Image (cartoon, rainbow, N blue to C red; front, side, top):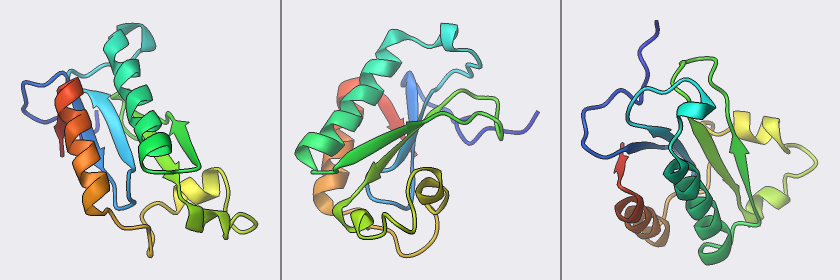
Length: 130
């Protein structure tokens, strides 16, 4: 079985991997879980809260929730914000193509306000940030 990037040593119940793109995280339980029935309800609350923060406090027009657990079996969700500058590219990239370009350059950079919001969110939901 392929090693999961979520396999970290921590005491928190959840792990969030920060992506290159401002506000983008992959959220997973710290304990390896492979089915939705095993997910604690607090997981969905944490994901919903980060998505709401991106939309309401940080002014992302839209946040995609994407679940792809093919590469690693550890169930996780991608929370992927669109930003106003993405709207200019709407004809070129939308939906999955925009998501698939998440590691290409340039991406909207993490700023101090977004980093602070993520740290506060992580404390509220006991999330280990990687």
